[in-house]
Length: 104
Image (tube, rainbow, N blue to C red; front, top):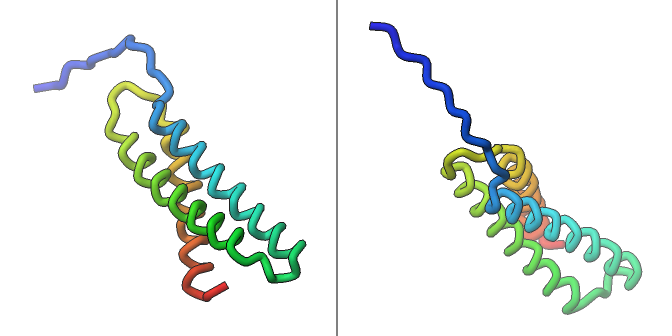
């Protein structure tokens, strides 16, 4: 038996969680750039500022990745922001883990 073609005329919306994930990934990227700038300006003696920005950036990337993955389960949404947010947060998470593991 042939399947019936079903059409949906519901308007797809942008995922709020996808947008939040994208913002969190962007904040994590900005924090990384701030750390690089502060470390360069202070000639490697950034101290506690680099540590707090680093932990914050890691947590933003981790939460952004989790929210981005969860946003794929929403119904009737556009997948642009969940894809951007998940990829950006995932890349930032790998960068932060790499920085922590090499001990910079």
